[in-house]
Image (cartoon, rainbow, N blue to C red; front, side, top):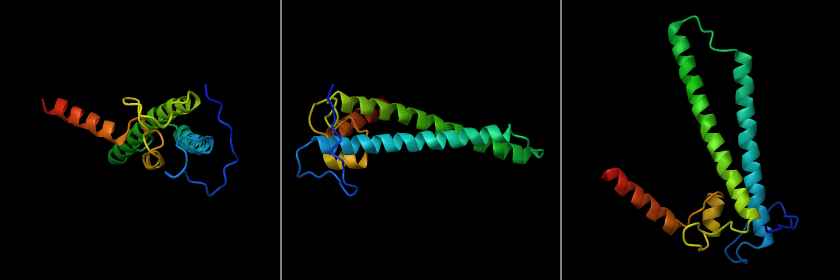
Length: 143
């Protein structure tokens, strides 16, 4: 397990392609981004649960209003389920940081790249491997 020393990231620090790939500062940056993202999702989920508890169920007397409320309720639950899955992926990504595997493609072992990780901090595949994976999925769907 890699021990990531927090090098006291300056608030304006953003990893760049010019620095050593996955150095302690860069790892600390991505770890903090993932933790912040996870906390944001957890807070949103908690607010939703609180709101649903406060509502005490759908009590609309009009059938159309009740149908609309049920659709909204269902959409909210599906969104929270997507958040749950994303939180799980974030947890797995944090584990990859701890294991010293973060930033490297799960298929090829090649660096994923700073730009890709800035756009998608929980990426586990390089762009090339992701494109190959998507082409393979498309072929399977077309069969």
